[in-house]
Length: 270
Length: 259
Ligand SMILES: Nc1ncnc2c1ncn2[C@@H]1O[C@H](COP(=O)(O)OP(=O)(O)OP(=O)(O)O)[C@@H](O)[C@H]1O
Ligand SMILES: [Mg+2]
Image (tube, rainbow over all chains, first blue to last red; front, side):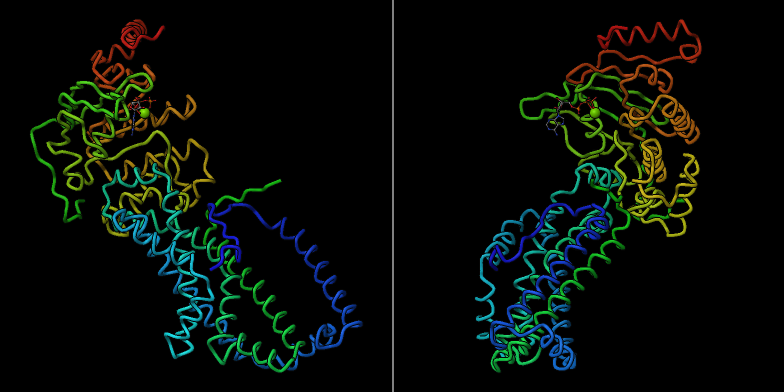
């Protein structure tokens, strides 16, 4: 995965109250969207439709041609969800093992670091060679790409665990499992959420990419089809849909995060 | 009361805590130098010493977090470091800072030790409630640590230490972050509980007054930790102003503090 593809926030989960920021951002976002639509409209006046389709045509495509393909959209979303949950579980386990078993740490760490150095495209091509079944290809690609993010962030979370808390917990003479259950797992929940929030956009792009290469169903495959048919308006419409889906999924994670981590104090930043 | 299968009551004739010719080095730093003392069962002993004297280090040795460079540390006749798990439920610690877990409410924080000791669910809740009420925090049970004041947090942390009903209570300056009035009320509450249940208690403090008021015996430590003076305040020392002052000055002299 190329490192400039997504900027990972590996700091402690932020405890800021974003709501005031979000309000300001929404307004700015609206203006930017209007400007993009205007620019597209202007461009469509000068360029042929197969280069810059007018916004209205894109909207029509979206409504008549793309939304009826809801089953393809659903397939992509399910693939994304399954891979994300799997990577979350495996990555968290690896991170916890790295944090709690110092003997295994260097080995897992090397493995994870090597993995992060392998470009997503290599994994996609390898997956096509290795597996016949498209679902397995996509699942494999997504997993190897996403697991390191969770593993490294969870490991960092455990390293950031205050020593005082551990000492306090150990003063009751717990077993290793009890330390894991009562101290480490609740502590890393915040890190898992932060990772999900920062990785979900990247994961969406990767699943589309993987579908384009490895599958005949799903949004990525449909976009490939549109491209093959020189249907640029459909490509634009799919893109629009993806942007919307991305924003929705990110807000969903943010809402979940807020609920689960409701114990944290809200800090107003002026 | 003893619901727990892997706990067997510790029955020995030895003192609750025994420190025998203990040395502790951290690299080139000597934290404890040839320290010997003991704490009998049911006794309240206070540790007085200047900052950096090695008080917390001694406490860590008794907790079993580390082992001494040389010498012998025994808690109920056992090595707290090697027999770490055998001393479950025997020792409990009140720390210098409250160390509450932010994702647990006040009552859930009190429950931590009980959960680790595998108490039954209903009993965990009941005991936690009881102890929160005893530190006057019954109404704050469902508040998160960030919603509590510093004094309330410290009281929750004391309730957490006391809730497992330990035989030995180690307190490391756990009143020193509170204002004078709160600290005094809490101190008398805690000493009442300790005396009522005949607990063994070793508490660290840098306030001479606290030590005289609470302790059966006071150990004054120099730096690195070694015994400078050992006194047992009498009831008159606490009530008689002149005697109190006299004892205070004696301790202050030993500590090398101007009074
Ligand atoms: N884990 C450690 N590693 C290295 N040095 C340590 C460690 N713990 C304590 N020391 C050193 O041992 C000495 C005694 O420290 P300790 O914390 O026991 O003092 P203290 O009497 O509790 O002081 P205070 O009243 O300020 O809490 C200090 O010089 C300290 O730097
Ligand atoms: Mg200390």
